[in-house]
Length: 208
View 1 (cartoon, rainbow, N blue to C red):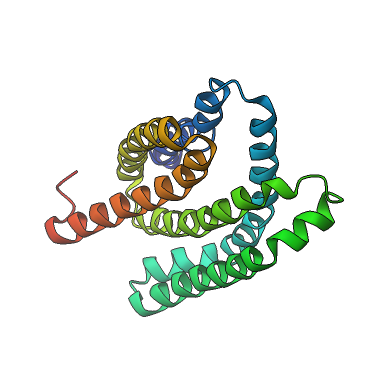
View 2: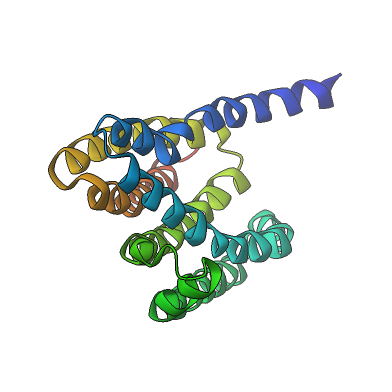
């Protein structure tokens, strides 16, 4: 019973947090649909789909090293924790940088030359894979220290900021604004998460 209660208290904030994911990866399509440019929206969606292939690399690395990250946090091994996070972020950054350089050729190959127009979106969205990886690494650090309620607060604040960012960027730059909104949203979430961790480190367990 105690284990079940502990698990429920730990998981509920994370479950609620997941509901706000739409504000980060779906709200852009809601705003873009209102522009009534179906052809460009289709090209943008192709760009999102192709850029998402590179996110598989982060998922693979994260699933491989996640137990080690949590173990190093539990053992208070800051050096190992930093090294694991650093290696994952650098690997994702290098892979996406190469992908950006080769994107036009790869898109031509993957779509049989039909969606070359999506190349600018793919290049921008590939950058969001990097900022997303940074955010997820910060989330691992927050959850690893048991701050699941803190992760929820970071997600709520970040998601609210993201909706505002998407709204204004899409109003001004339309589809390119949506792509850059993806990059900036995860960068903002990363920053909020780092601020939260710094706050916890300074003020301890008895605060938010």
